[in-house]
Amino acid sequence: VWDRLQNDLRSIDGQQYGAYKRLLGKYEHASPTFTLSVDHVQGDAYAAPSRVRAIIPWRETGLPDEYLQSDIRRIALCDFVTRVCASMIRAKHLDQNVSGGGGGWSGPKGGAFNINAPGQEILPRTSAMIDGNKTIELRCTVSLPAAGRTVLGQQAYQILGVNLVELVEKSLLYANLDQKKLQLHVQTAENQQSLRQQLGPRKLVAFVANGSILPRASGASESPMDSTNVVPFQSPKDLETTLSLENGTEVSGMGIAKGVTLLTGGGFHGKSTLLEAIQLGVYNHIPGDGRELAVADPTAVKIRAEDGRSVASVDISPFISNLPGGKDTKRFSTDDASGSTSMAANIQEALEAGCKTLLIDEDSSATNLLVRDQRMQSLIQNEPITPLVSKARALHAEHGVSTIIVIGGLGDWLSVADTVIGLESYIPRVLTGEAKAIVQQYPSNVAQTQDYGSLPLRQVQVNLSGLRSPYAVRKHFIALKAETRNVVDDPSEAETGVDISGLDQIVEIGQARTIATFLQKVAGRTARGHMLVSALMDSEAAAMGSDRCLSTSLEGGGLVGVRLTEFAAALSRLRGLHVEAAS
Ligand code: ADP
Ligand code: MG
Image 1 (tube, rainbow, N blue to C red):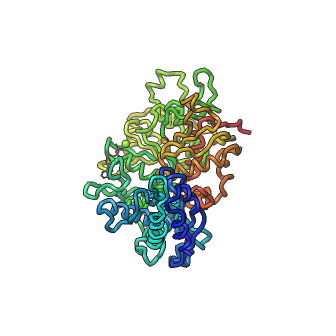
Image 2 (cartoon, helix red, strand yellow; image 1 turned 30 degrees about the vertical axis):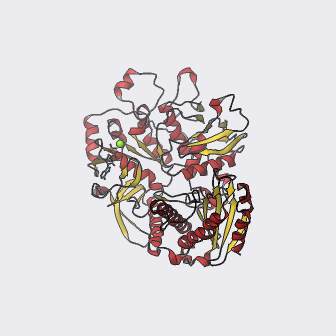
Image 3 (tube, rainbow, N blue to C red; image 1 turned 60 degrees about the horizontal axis):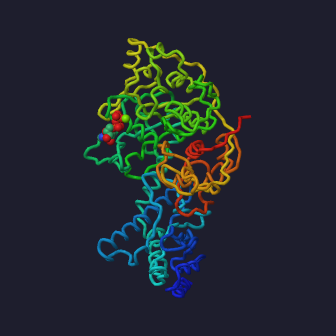
């Protein structure tokens, strides 16, 4: 049966490149039994590469059934398989380049596999997926080889007929996998999920285990900092709490309770590093990451100022009212938000999407939305902003929303904090008592608002008609090309889209692709607030941790799981989003 692939390739050898289209369809391989599905064939050698899937029956892989037992196990297994496949592809290509063919795959220039390579997080991915517990499939791309404009049939067979088989054998057959490593990968993910589930009942919003390695190798690398330079995390005694891993093993670390928590300390003492570990604690990390026992409330959202963003009909009135020109802040819209209005909108949108923990770093905030000190209160009487420091307590009391905020220079926050954690040379200490004493000594009269108001819920009409998506996706920008607009006449319209650079919890470009795919699907629909998204995917699939939302996708192997929150955030940033009045 596999002969058919060889025959097909032989018959088109030397023909025009377009003859590769004949490969579309399925080929059966005998031992191991798997199906090669050629889903897309590139139009020429320089076009986006062809898409193939290798689909293998579960029983053929020899993988233990225990890996099918839960969503998290399936996700972690598929994530692992993707990594094995990606590193094999990388190694083969390196070998080829370095040693001129030694242990690498022979094949002409361009005869390259590619699979969407994962970063530090274990996530649902379309690069490897389990279907109905019956099959597991790998999705990768391949550049079909050409000589000029003609088909190189022999080389193509080497790639698809030989190298692909090796790829399948090495990454999908249990006997060939590093079984201990796989087990650790799955356990690590399960442990994080389990720790995260213990947060709520313990009234915690975050937990960082002792010994965690939080800092990264550099601003440009997400791998852990070299152990020679690093100070491992150590909880202060007062905040130490013990949770248990999946197998019952106890683990101690710092628990951050619900309420208002300040992370403070001198500059360069590790405040932002701790907050970043918490903001990525919504995800499960790979073994060896250093943050694999650092978890956060899964609804936690990093909030930052994002001036210039577009805002569509958001109620920012808890924070801002009486704008000059009588602009309505209950339904605030702008194409170009300021620091403070963007941050207010970011908070309200996060709450709309179900966020119960706000994560804020002074470094990336609009100061005037965080505080207004007494002198400024005296000087400026018609200030439209009520800062977060006046609302954070009400937000917790009325809506159960906690705040973790990094503050180095704004002492007014001391008077509203339940817990003050000071970082000294990367070691946290509890400073709540000292802070209370200082508030007594230097009172600052932070006006407290009793009433936060109700949480926002917009009626959203997404009008994407005439827009194609995705046109081009980068990690920080999703470009949507208008089909109807005349790009030649108006170059400024050549690229419209969604700027998602303000979403600090997007960790992979594949997540941006997922958002882009969903955006296309919601075109023209109407729903209440974030319900829009849930209505779209079945409720289970919408939740992080299930790959079902991805499995229906025909978009190839490049999609990566994303929370509802990030999708809602991207939707809110869509320029031209049409929002109906709430009913
Ligand atoms: P802050 O926000 O308090 O100014 P950062 O979190 O930005 O400080 O950290 C300052 C520097 O210290 C960064 O380069 C970071 O990588 C490094 N760093 C943070 N935590 C640790 C640690 N536990 N051990 C060693 N270096 C660390
Ligand atoms: Mg900082």
